[in-house]
Length: 126
Length: 285
Image (cartoon, rainbow over all chains, first blue to last red; front, side):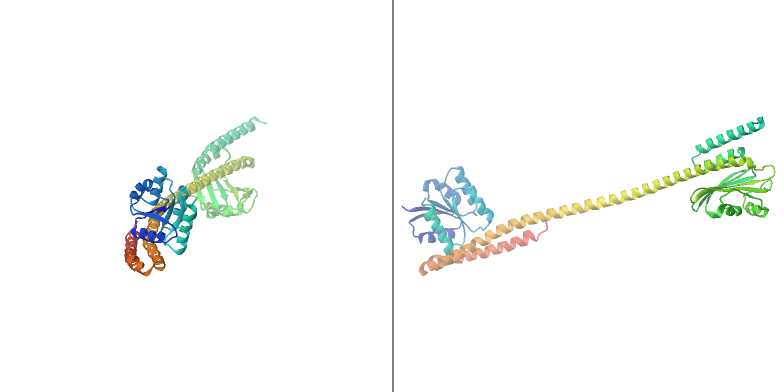
């Protein structure tokens, strides 16, 4: 059964990069990408993704707002934060949301992709 | 005791009582002068009397003549010729040297009706450096008697105590005035210092507020700029990673176009940051 992945990033290029990376992993993936976080949030319940890759800095609704709305509507889908922010404050704030599996900072490197794969293979298998 | 002697003692007792009472009510050197002028003539006979109070180098001289009493305050030059002699002795002295008497009387403000033949003098040192010197010029129909010596002694003791107390009170008043003046000066300086401190505090508060605003602005800008620049930069680096792992034809088709776009985004971001720094930080406030 394919792993359903939802990409939420306001940059279409970032979503393209993630698609290229994920399709090269030894996994069967079904990817839906969104550049509008509000639209993406509206699709979570319907798509019922295995994991959501979420950017933090976005217009209209940022990553924290997205997570807060998920909390308020009892959506507990696993989330992997993928951001260019290196702020320790942002990283520490993740504990407020139990469904955040991992926090990775861009750019994507061989090590980051390896860590992503590990998260997908281990944490999501549980 | 004969009736005459008893009567005489009673008169002396009453005169001394009146003198002491009037003197004790005197609050200034001028009032003491009036007291001496009115009361001393009842205590003993004299042609002329000088009372010289001294304390360190300060002299207060009462000169009592039948025509009235004068008061002088000053230094040692107020002393008459015979008083230099008296001051060097601490015992009662009778001076009958006509030349010395005449020398002294040359400084009298008005001539005496009868030329004195004797000066009964006494320098009584009550305290170290302080005392009262008396000179009773005697002669003619106003002759000082040996029996008057005890009365003179009481007069001296009372007069010294009174002059000393007046001087002490004056000193206290002067000290008080000096302290009040000093306090006034201190208060004025304190007010000036308070105003300076208030001005400095206002300046510091104003500068602190300016710095706080700038710091907040800097923090905000640094976070904003970090993201603005880092976002396209991390995209370029991610694309670089893909260049390594994707087949060349896929890189040329999919990656190179977005690499160019992202590089342009980075250039725009850098320009925005520089422009923001110029407008936000360089501007006052």
